[in-house]
Length: 250
Image 1 (cartoon, rainbow, N blue to C red):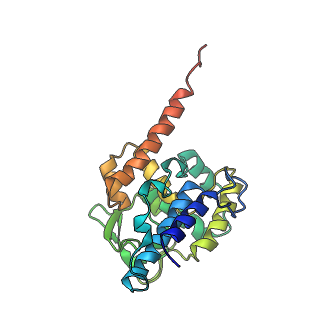
Image 2: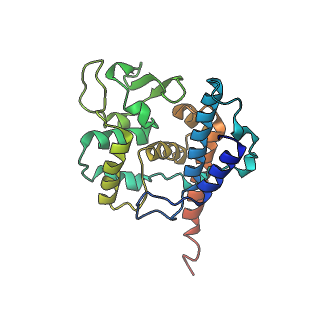
Image 3: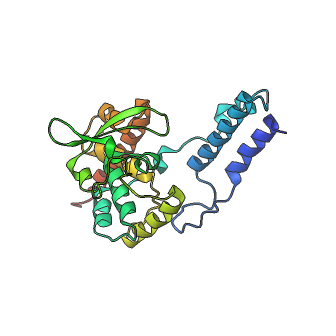
């Protein structure tokens, strides 16, 4: 029976569940806080649909105290530095479309669900002759226009027909192992998934001095508070860099 007791038990299970992803770089044998939060959100989505379809009369998750639910941990949002991006550029990847798409997303902030579906007809030239990309985001069905830098344009493959997909990518689950192999070959000791390209785009733009409000628009964030999480990550990284000067002349 799907009731408050069942949901409470599921939440408790998440907090002690073992991580079955055999990644040698993981810091813990247990599910990451962000993974717990994501799985809990998926359960909430299913329960809401069940209520709408009158399979259950109410969502038992609504009766769980918010403070008892798994929270996201912004500090664990993995991203790549400029130096690490340079290493990837100089390292061969066994799938050229994965390499191009990932680097393109590191500069534009597109999600995998969007970059795997954009077509050449979504691109156009603005008044200055630079590319801009118009498409509807898969996640929230919001129409968005993104200005594409010349650096990002370099990673576009050879142009095809207007209705052709720009990047020929398989499912995300198949792309991530290719990505992990490429990252390891580049000598980068980080647990990088395709979604980390989006984190990279946000932190990269903020570290270059782009205002938070502008980055928020570039990323298609519905709330500026989401972008501010990345600003805190950048501030923390900059503080760590400055702290390395301590004792330099002792």
